[in-house]
Image (cartoon, rainbow, N blue to C red; front, top):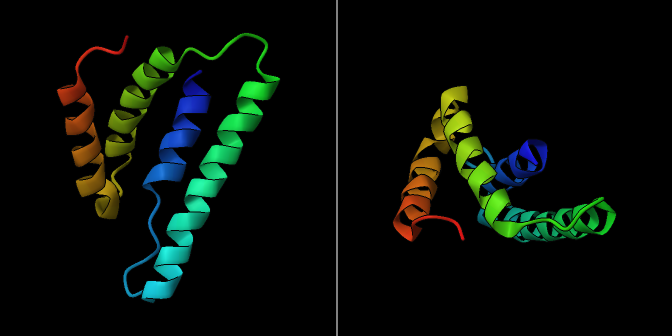
Length: 93
């Protein structure tokens, strides 16, 4: 479950480098969403047991913190924002 959540976090946090044209940034955003949804569908289709969304969310929170520790300065604001949102939501159910 850790790897699944880590992949989702990495795919959702990645940003094009500074100076990337607006059209490419928009295409990257759309492409990223399609890639994540395809990854989730494929993972859940081939999982040996049902994927518990609350459990995935717990591992995503852990992976957000791990990614902060990885020290990618460009991702820090988005990681902090996402962590704040997750903690504001409260306990996964």
